[in-house]
Image (cartoon, rainbow, N blue to C red; front, side, top):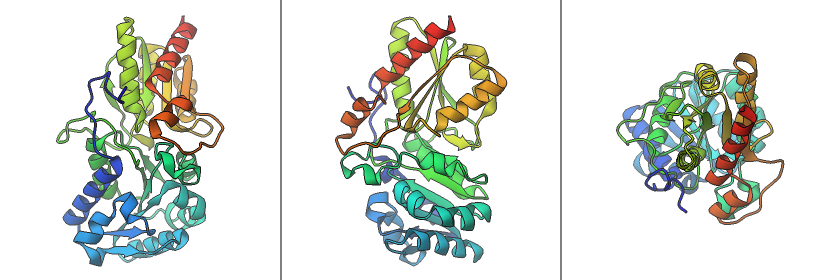
Length: 322
């Protein structure tokens, strides 16, 4: 079944294409924005800027450390750099430069980590960013955004560009169903969106897992169970108030992420819950394993990142709640 169909969501074009459109928009609106590429613009879709504003587009080549260093230098010259590549390449090849030149220096640079998660599919495990949010989460000054649909991608790129300070934005190769109207997406850094109300438990997701959470909530509704669904589009800073309220008002939480569970978003949610309002929790995410290449939908099923898996986790946490 197509992702989002149970919740009545419509399919979208690949999120990386949406990022390209959103990036071109902020470059058009703000003459200070420049784009740096690691020879992957056709994949990240940063080539929208290369075609329209070649003088503000810099292909640094397959040299991620230089990519980050040159971006930091351009920021020091008064520009707002968007440093673009795959999550796996940036975080594994240039983490030292990101840590020192961007995060520790607390500069106004924006980093796109494209092809996050396992849904890039047949490109294989070397290019899958499954540890990117954990690694970026180790940098205290870094704001971390994970859009869940086309409207939130546009809003996130705009918010990241306007925000003063380091920002990491995760993108995806695949499409994500439309959750928000294109011209009406609430997006405030650090404030989660409630995309479905419910009193029996809360499902907290980000990225592609928000649509899966809505599908799971529709399945639960057929059983007479009303699940609240939060779109946690900002991983840092976390919306502590929304998470605490969800725990207090619904009494149980399921987290869902396209990322390793170890060091992932669910672990951070659990810390907030433990400190403020302890309730039963269950976690849907990638276990301690690397993933082979394959069809994205097949991989989501094999590694238990589907609406059915969220539904099962919800049933388990409700049993623990009693």
